[in-house]
Image (cartoon, rainbow, N blue to C red; front, side, top):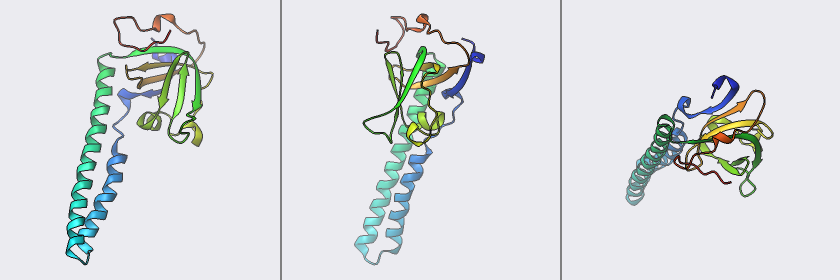
Length: 177
C-alpha cells in the first residue's frame, strides 16, 4: 500500500488519547459533592456530600481507566498488525435507530458504526451535525476483529476494490461473503 495514494482521514497511531471528556464531565459531580460537604447546614447532608464525592471520584477513575485501556488495546492491535483491511466504494448514512449517536459506514457487506472517539477524532461531527459524507468515495479501512476502525483513507484517484484485501483464513477478520 502506498499511503501517498490516500487522503488519510483517521490514523489511530497519530491520534492522541481523547478520553478526557468523560473524566472532566464526572468531575462536575465531584464538585457538587464537595460543595454539599462544605456548605450543607445539616450534618447528614455533609456526610452525604462526602460519600457522593467519593463515589463520583471512583466512577471518574473507572471511566478514565476503561477509556485508556481501550485506546491502548487499539494502539497495540495497530502496531502488531492484528487487523484486517477492506477497500471499496463507501455508503455513508445516519443511524436510523439513534441519529444523534452514530453514523453507519458500509463497504460492500461490511458495516461499521462510527461512534465516540472514532467519530470525534476522525470526522469531528457526524452527518446529522454537518459532518463529512464519504458516500460514493473509494475508501480503505483497517479494522480490528471488533469492527473498530484504526485507519481510514480516501483514495485520491481511481477505485478498483482489491479482492486480495479480503482477510485470509488465518488472519482475524469479519468478511461476510
